[in-house]
Image (cartoon, rainbow, N blue to C red; front, side, top):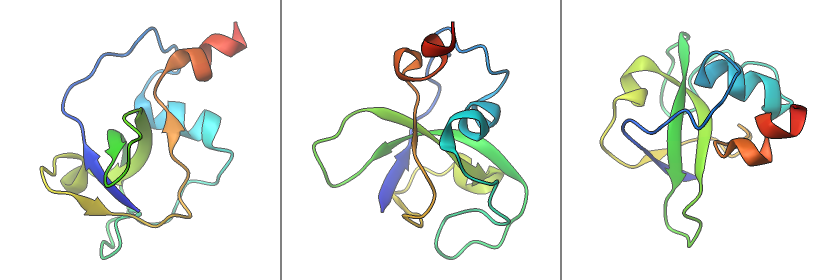
Length: 97
């Protein structure tokens, strides 16, 4: 799957503590051992705000990436096994209230 990292972005009232915590809470997956970028072997992961590339989906998502790939300005290829979690809190955090 192709994604691009979105710089900045608001927290939209998320109470999870961090983007990485948001992903952990709503992905239903175990934290990956390595960055899900297809050729990366870095272990330290952060939550990145991303957008899918090559499709009409303009939603924003959270995915764990290493620090290097969180700062990437290029399109990245990530494993499709890693769940993209909606960044829109009305689809995640707001449902917990």
